[in-house]
Image (cartoon, rainbow over all chains, first blue to last red; front, side, top):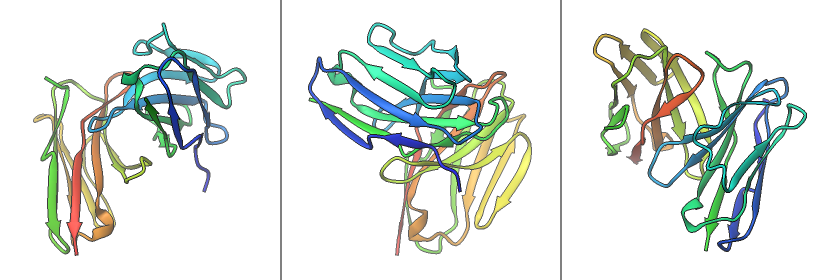
Length: 114
Length: 108
């Protein structure tokens, strides 16, 4: 069964360093989502792509976070510089076309900022 | 107040018990999702509902649109059901708004 791949699974970094996360959605899925999940809370959408275009980045802290999906397939989420409050699980999900489709989630990247 | 509220926040049950997790929301929605998150983080979509009731194995999900309420039931619970169960609602667009989850522990 096709899955959403993410790497790394775990990342420990010091504050002020740069970190990057990678996501490879299910083949053929046009919509890709990056979520942040703080411990004990539900996921919060950071950015949504439709193919290579950003359709929602209203909750993305753009002073330090950036996301790209250059060829409309895999995606990278970057944080520079990392802050202590960025410690969280970063989840990637994809769906066939968005809208009413089921979202399929990757295993997540757990970030710890020291 | 969060748009999506779940109860209880934590639930411990004995193997075999019938379990109910509740979700209330305060906005108009086009669909409601129930998701399961295991330790380690991976999330699996269990149900997507816009009306009525759905059943998959030992899991049953119901929704009452007028009352803005949904329930997830687990029959004959098993330790492998231990996970966090998350309710999420979809409004008019693509965006999902998530509840904070219900942490379920099923003891053998």
